[in-house]
Image (cartoon, rainbow, N blue to C red; front, side, top):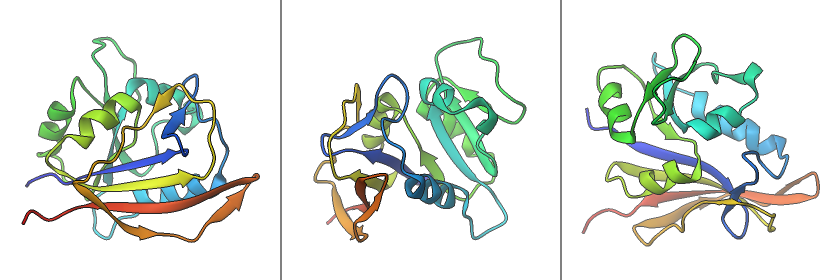
Length: 177
């Protein structure tokens, strides 16, 4: 089966996604959206999430692995201690190859910056779920620009939590003409 990839990311107006390996904002509505999107399935199989090692380590230990999802960590480190059921792969391609033999619904790339950059160039990427935070934060990690292969397909109303305005945006890959 050809794998369809989707990206899930929250970024500020400067495409900032993190500072010192953590989120520089606290938006419970975005976390709820992320959990609902990445765990919600219509079939009998779980969704897969692919995450870089640094982003994995930024998730509080008590929340790892992300429940009700197949967790795959990308790292070049040969020795990494992970909970049972968590897969470790050395590259996005090796993760996708491994997923070919594991029944699952959707496959989401959830960070960080290096993994996003690679995923944006992958031919199987179909959708980008972007929570656009409508201000700038002091970030040291950034999401690459979304190029013209993708079109904005949906935008939510603007919401506000903790004095931070944001909206959910979905980009879809344009069909080949």
